[in-house]
Amino acid sequence: MKELWSQRCRGLIPYTPGEQPKGRKLIKLNTNENPYPPSPQALRAIKEAAGEGLRLYPDPECTELREGIALALDVKPEQIFVGNGSDEVLSLAFQAFFDPDKPIRFADITYSFYPVFADFYGLSYREIPLDEHFSLPLAPFLEPGGGVVLANPNAPTGRELDLCDIRSIVAANENSVVVVDEAYVDFGSRSAVELVSLFPNLLVVRTFSKGRSLAGLRVGYAVGDKDLIAGLNAVKNSFNSYPVDRLAQAGALGAIRDQDYFRATATKIISTRACTSGHLRSMGFTVCDSAANFLFVTHETVPAKVLLEGLRQRGILVRWWDKPRISNYLRITVGTDEDMQTLCQALREIIAEQA
Ligand SMILES: *Cc1c(COP(=O)(O)O)cnc(C)c1O
Picture (tube, rainbow, N blue to C red):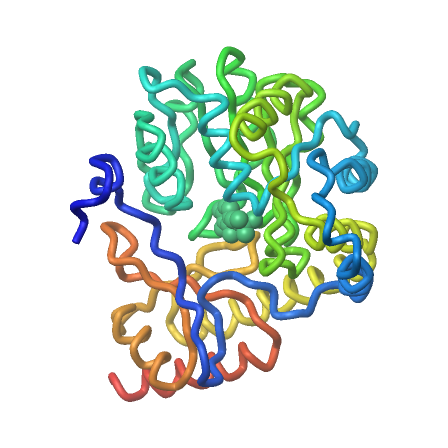
């Protein structure tokens, strides 16, 4: 019954998010949430903000939060833009910086929201094929063109791009914007934030969802030259000037101030990731080198679809895509050590059943 929908709405192909199960107790390794709770300081700040003040609109400019982020990253508050999750920030960036007649370049295997945004805003794009090891070929990104979007570390592969390569890409595209989506940078890779003061065309997008355990709060931000930030504000303020609510601003500020807690949880995930990779390799999996909080894996004999179903029957959710090149892979979020032991045990059983 789509008769009442606009033509444009009828043609949309929306992003399919990972399942958020209700009821039954499952081990959720399918949407890259952090297995550890948010910082106690963040929770305290949210509780304090949940009072009478809620009758007032939030600060449309997220002033205090931007100051807190700027302090943590050693940049100026004018270089920060805050939105409802990095998905919103990315969506505003697509509108602010890309034009329909100049194709945006991104990898063929990357965050599947990029083509969704491009289609939604009527933008054209070129999907650059990763090589057989899922490495990014540099040459197509070194020609000037209509903008670049890179996830670093990449999703769903977890592979990290060298900061020197990012620098070369940004330098080669001085007349268009290069967006670096650092949703997973908190798990051990080097951030491109150190380049934003050198390159006015670089926008780094980050989130509180993964490294800061606040996926439920919806806070993300961009770091870039003040003129890029002004472009994001121009788009945002043309249709909704109050997007980030009071609880979200307060919680994110609490989280960014608690660097010790953040480092402790990220370190734990990095060590669980290393340990799990080893176990999976010993079971016959090929595991992409991951700098993120997930592992992208394929088994030498058992098809990914069989593993996916077997895990599901045992109450463990992981992510699988029915897409060319990656349909024999699973993406597994790094949970707690206990989650990962349960996962490995389940995989051993499924593999043994298939032998
Ligand atoms: C999770 C994710 C995001 C979105 O994060 P939110 O801040 O929760 O909207 C953006 N980019 C990539 C690559 C992600 O995996």
